[in-house]
Image (cartoon, rainbow, N blue to C red; front, side, top):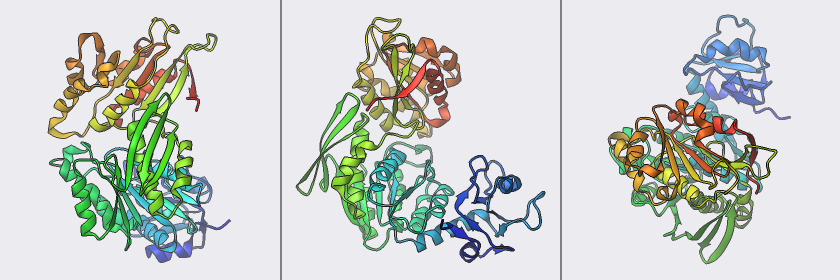
Length: 477
């Protein structure tokens, strides 16, 4: 088995010092998931990773990347000593990028980064050796960690890049040096750190700053800030490929939510594509067409990609659809759960409400005669000074108006709850934790239930509580 890193390679990349030779077959920042043979990187976050070096070595780490030998660690322990651990991780990332011949795609956007990354991984891994982070590692340590973990013989790599504040994307793009950069969309997210939507678009456009010469920018042509993205693409000399209902390069002709699938018709230069996703969602459909555009720009086969994309399902908390069997003794006594509890902003909430509105509850299987469409909504965070208004205005959404009952948690969602018609109001509580003991009364067999909110709203607690009402099984495809 070829090592990912040798001590000599790491010393050359970081300028650090190692008193002995070793080989690492992975890179880890967490002793809870570390594998034997990993290089443990002692990052400083809430806790200082140096506190866990001894534990990492006990679990079989090949070596540890540190600034000093921590207390309790033997003098002859395999350590790579550097001036700054995060800087050294970045150096490993750049070395990993320099030694590979992989075609690399970088993805950003206010909504759909992780889902799109996973879609692209699903299609590219059928056409070569594909590398991507197993989680949403898209920040100042997540991007270098993903790159440092990339094997030299990778054919394709998909790197997700996110931001919370201005100035974060450019250095990560320059570290990644993508051949293709994609912006899924620009929406009202992290507005607390930006003056307006155009400001977010300017920052998202910076994903193109690291493009390789002759690189391609795959951009959403439908959004109101698309001109900001296109202007930036021209300024860096990128070839532009636009996707969306307005195209013109990859044109979404039709999207149909049909039961548990989404059927998509698209056109690229006169070539017609008809394909499906194994989950419902217009927002997923738009990004799926963008994925075909990225695959094509990377030199992969877009026709094969359109067939293989049906194997993709959303990551946990990002639109996962599952069946909760509430009584295994009674046939059909179950409810459908749409777990979208990882992230939320007005754009993504509208998309999720459309999926819920298009779903079909089941009658005559629960306490109530009629199955219902139920939304359990937590606060949408980091929306800036207009956050109360954004929550309240959601009451006017046409998809929300088709729902039967809406439960809300959090001070911001109180604004929506107050604006709801009396007959649609469920419970409102200050915190999501207060909904947990009510779970059995919030939902019933036959219901289709959406749980949606920003991660910080902790509405995922309600997802867990609903799962505990019965026996979980994935939706049948």
